[in-house]
Image 1 (cartoon, rainbow, N blue to C red):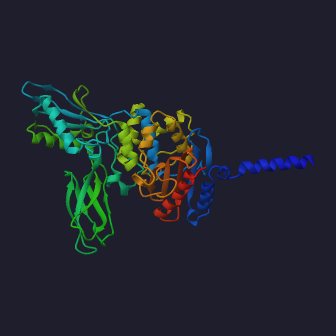
Image 2 (cartoon, one colour):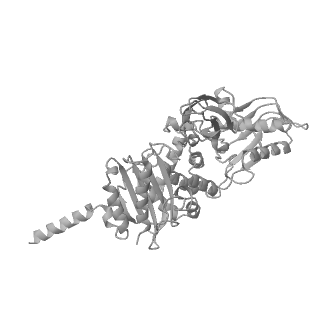
Image 3 (cartoon, rainbow, N blue to C red):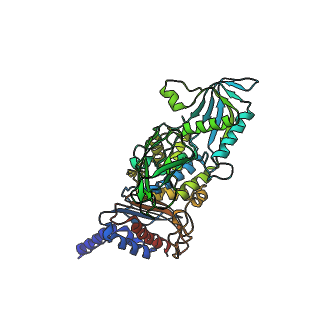
Length: 496
């Protein structure tokens, strides 16, 4: 009898430890139901999906489902990048782009030397989303004014865009080819400009299948050669036009369709060499103000290719400061801007003593959190934005890092950067009329085959929760997967 009792106790213990963790979430009954429903959904048969819900006050797990499975993240990777940037650089950090010269500046304003634009990796240079007097024209006018106030009237040497703080490899090696020529695939340079993108205006043909015509680029691009294979799609078919091309090259292949009807239709592409374009635009601005250039417009990359040395003793006469990092982080997460995330990742790596390359940045982020006690097993980082399908981490890893962020001094800046359910950003049209509306903040993610959300929510009970849900390789449309994950988020918000 005693042996039977012991055997029963052992069986009960075994059963307890092998109960799926979701069944132990007594405070989240609706979420448990939603998890069971999703897990049995036929669309999830080929999928891998992962969910972690933590108590935000204690960090204790409330519900775990495949929480140790490493999965592709899509743009929820930006949550990891922006948290690390806030932790390493600080919310008040400002990028510093410097104007400097070499050689001698005489009393007549003749500079017998070179003019340098020394980049700091600022992804917001010339962006019109950073507030008044910070767009491209205003920034160039500001620089020109300061150059003239420094007494420079003629430059005997060159104007050099120095992007050397970062690696010359702007795009991560694991980014898809079809992305790199488009605006969302704009790589990160040590000297960025206009978010490294341009607008391409095209004229559709007069019938479905007809050829299209390239009209213009805004701002004007100097070095791009468009091979236009875009045709006219049916009316209302939307933007199905793609730009194919690599950094530092001029050929741009235009493929796909744009809709019949409008006199002009716009798509957006990535600037091939931001550092050169930045230096060229400054040259044009100075030339318009009567400041003469006798030399060339070039970059540190081109000079190194030619075996020319970059001057070390440069006289800095003006520093252009970015807005505080908290505002850049808000734009990164609210608008999901890839070039911002990539620049933040590289810049924090430089701050930590690593090189300003994607690979070093990913190593820096992983090492940083490993040193903070996070188990990084299965964390394979390939970029800072989540565009690469080769990124992977577990929902528990990301939730654990979010928990550490919530206890930090920068948490309010992180929280303010996230879209609000039913109110803003990528969540503006989601979760309306549910308990999550106005109470759930999250970074969303989407690339082909991946849907994900990571955020913070004040549950119906008043308890603060952290959640991460990521789904890969589902057998349904992206829109259908989004609606399925909405039910998960409603379940989290309905916590008792």
